[in-house]
Length: 75
Image 1 (cartoon, rainbow, N blue to C red):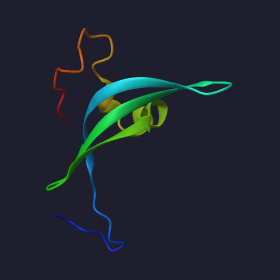
Image 2 (image 1 turned 135 degrees about the vertical axis):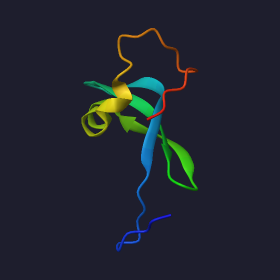
Image 3 (image 1 turned 30 degrees about the vertical axis):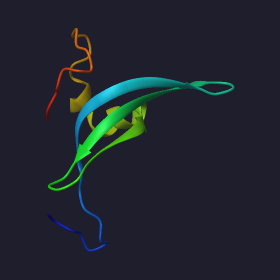
Image 4 (image 1 turned 90 degrees about the vertical axis):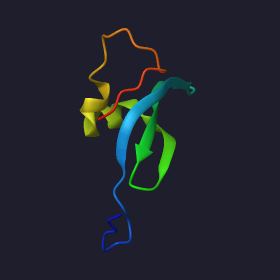
């Protein structure tokens, strides 16, 4: 495990687990549940789809394919 000077460690997104739309008063926010992993820790968090797509476009390379979220997509 590699720890940086600021005592953080790098985690990498593994795959998109789920999608959801959060409805607020005036707008809708698209969310994706991302599986994150480093050498010892694995966790899932909800992230804004637009921001995740900008940072990790490879996670969305399956768009247009007929997949369900039980299929595994590894990067």
